[in-house]
Length: 592
Ligand code: UD2
Ligand code: MN
Figure 1 (cartoon, rainbow, N blue to C red):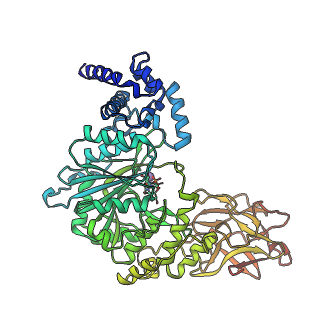
Figure 2: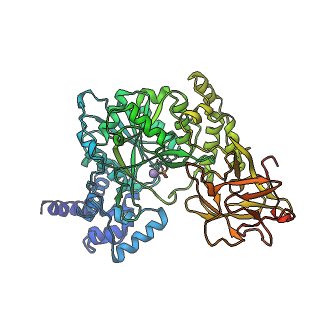
Figure 3: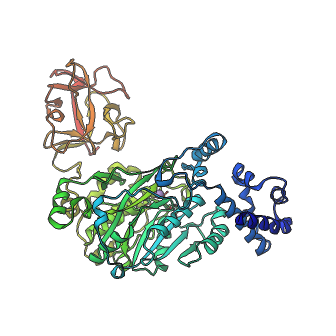
């Protein structure tokens, strides 16, 4: 009742100044169209905010109205406890439409409360932990954003305020990386000053888009908390996530920490976990991409040795981190080299920081009692600066500084990056590496990530597997490495590329980075396909091959790799071995 009255008063006020509003909006405020109805039907009515400020009162009233309409649109029951929600009818259609554009259901997000609750997804042992709050370091949470949906960003802020102990949360710094979306300017500022007036939420606006790496640096420069916690602008934090991070940094200043990142579905906003029993940590691919890996048995043993709590809630060493959500001591952030400021746009900074931290004496750890949800999107809703592959360029910079000779493996996977003109100069990063007396990449692989397969180490041969009688090479075709797939052949690429890169290991496994070649058990015909399956930890006999007199022989079946009657793009086969057959002769080469 009271808000209704206030709204009425407000509408009158807006009405008085409505001359400065766009035509359509005037109609709304003169009461010809139910404004509530209109905004729900036409989100673009927020256009009002795109008009230049005429008088402060008018603009503020417009923000006020818009914010009230936003709040009216929300249904507190929707998505409560992190459950999935589904729109119907016209709203569902609009949700699908916006989803196609930005890979996120903004329509739905606008209907979920900023303060929706999440189910506690922590391991039960986490609940028994006690923290001595006054002794913990304080934190500045830094959230960077570029044209993120307003409601998603605001929910990230509320979620942080609701879940991070207020005695520990010194401030939230929102860094606007030059967003063009007007709603993220005046209205956001107005929202913060009227709805979150505790002074803890600050907005730093960059004049131009600097890319997420420099945006994080800008936020870190003005931060005053003891610990920096970085978040993406589409996160919802789970209960009790701050304390375990801050406690661990108090114990170990050079540990860089990541929470378990739970998944918020970009379509229905379901907050889902993999259960609390297990979680993954960070790995990488030689192409310079981050990937998720299981916690190794080696690491589990280390946890048992070095941690006096139930193993499932012990910090887990992580060879790399995803990059978006992490906590680091503020001074250590700068001492350890913060970021490479010459990295533009998006990508690469996560592996750079991961290798640097490990090689220069720190650790990266997943803290299982700290869980934060993140909306994973299928594609980037934004364009890249100057349309460049900033991930590739940044990763090349990273590899040239931190990976020693292993940089060649990166370039084998990314030949397009080898002489890329935009890579630039890295002298200052190399000096940093010297100054901090950082260890080698060899050391990193041996000690931090010995499970990582190195395609040119402990191998009989590596490179492309080329047919002798024809310019055909074994090729992944378009398959990815997630599911088993049939291996193919294709015209040999001029420069060795990822899809034609194989190794025959000393243990006689024919494989690429993630998958091993095998001939499926089965009917036992004489001509059969070759399947690529996830490599087992222990070499499986069925995955073994020998290489004799240019024949590649599957040990278990005794069949030979054979491209007889096959053409480019076909699936490769194995057939009964024949020492005279030209189509069974292969060479494995990496130099040409
Ligand atoms: C992942 C990371 C992300 C970052 C990236 C590699 C997680 C969950 N996310 O990609 O944080 O490390 O890998 O670079 O680990 N943004 C800007 N300016 C830009 C582009 C993006 O401020 O020019 C913001 C964006 O609004 C978002 C954040 O940077 O808040 C990360 O971008 P993203 O969410 O598109 O990246 P994501 O999660 O795919
Ligand atoms: Mn993200």
